[in-house]
Length: 146
Image 1: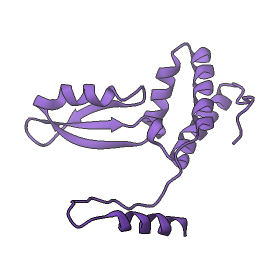
Image 2 (image 1 turned 60 degrees about the vertical axis):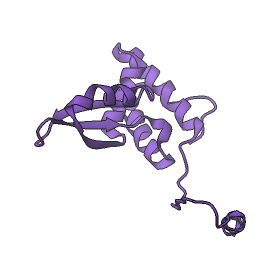
Image 3 (image 1 turned 180 degrees about the vertical axis):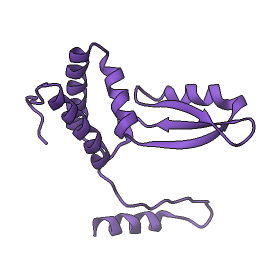
């Protein structure tokens, strides 16, 4: 009922002399800060065990279990698109593949976990936890609650 009240308030404020755009979509819980902190602690532990960086560990799990889209980008815009996409954060990276369209490249665009909901984040975390268990790494972290 609180949502309906908020909608009514907004509708009451709309005047006829303006242009408005609205989007209505189902609410999804964003990933929690606890999930994010837990993810980074476990990535650090894995990185120490296998001798790489926590960022590389994070990206490998994003690639294996994370969210991505495939876009067809004109070759003349490819470098700029990849740079702009990657500038969004550590987990925002691209891989390229050939396109059937002339002068275009298919780009797999991976999203960083900052835009994941709790279910998407849980999927990545479950994979990280499994890898910790495979490597005999403790998954216990004080202050984290699943």
